Length: 468
Image (cartoon, rainbow, N blue to C red; front, side):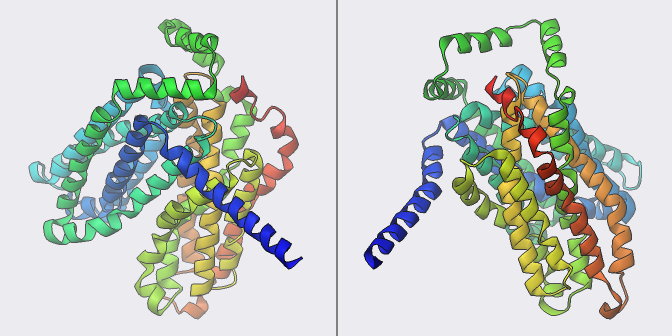
């Protein structure tokens, strides 16, 4: 009996190991074009976060804006990108993946050059020439990213099979977070030697590297070979391929009618699904709106002295956990994973309600990140999968719109909660961070509860569009 138990145990661990490694093996055997897309994405993640993390200080010290106006400029960039995706997400559907990526990165290159040189050739001060030039630079970045992000996820849909799709989306999401982590290692020594503008120039040069990767790795030949291989592996018939070609050859008027007929905002299930995630997504926004001030005010010693470490722990945890979690859950039902993942992400907020300690903080960060790794890539995969032919970009763009609302709404009340429950310049004994996190947990848990209550309605034809 002991021998049988040992064999069963070995078999269990072998199955776990196979489930964990096989998706990575399958993804490793995909196309050169997908490799180029992933490489481009991690570099773009590094350049974006490398600049945005220093942007408020840049506007303050180099452009001559006060703290309020400098913060608004960061808000213009982050909110502007989300709005741009809403209107420019369809670009990849109209002109194709390779052209969309090249145009997007070229716009960002121009924008980053203008932003970096603005203090040198303009005069500082609000609405003076340096400010105006820097805003033109931000506009270029906004337009470029509004095309780039939907194009990248459209590329994953185009360059993966049903077997490799889940890991493809997970890796792209993980690589974005790896890109967000890298500036923490790269930026400080450059900034100390060449100041913030030196960091901006470094990131601008890597934007050129990103363009070169798309141009030389994601070639037309590589794209054609990848698509042909995917169609063969997925068993796409000649009739289906002809239908897709016929759609891409429509006139502009026919395309506009097709887009109107299939526009995602006409789908009530789609609308419910993307907007009901806003409550749990507020926890993303609290990563930069609340955690920095919470860890620097409510803690003493190591946490207070090194609060940046804890604030930036989420991206590297996501990079590690997302592919592993996806490998183990890729065969699970997407909607069920959304319920479980959003619940696991919301639950640890109540742990912080027990009071500030390094144990509760680490428990929150690890469990919250685990929940994020379970649902966020699957959500992006679902949005891409339900999109009709040649409409993935616009679906991805609109799917990101609630994230814009989340950032705006959360920023409206987070400061008030900090002033009431974790105010500055008062003894920690007079703070009540427990109540703040209890309320935030109550907000976040609305998402999994609503998804659970709406399960019957949502599961009726949940993937009907993907299968159509």
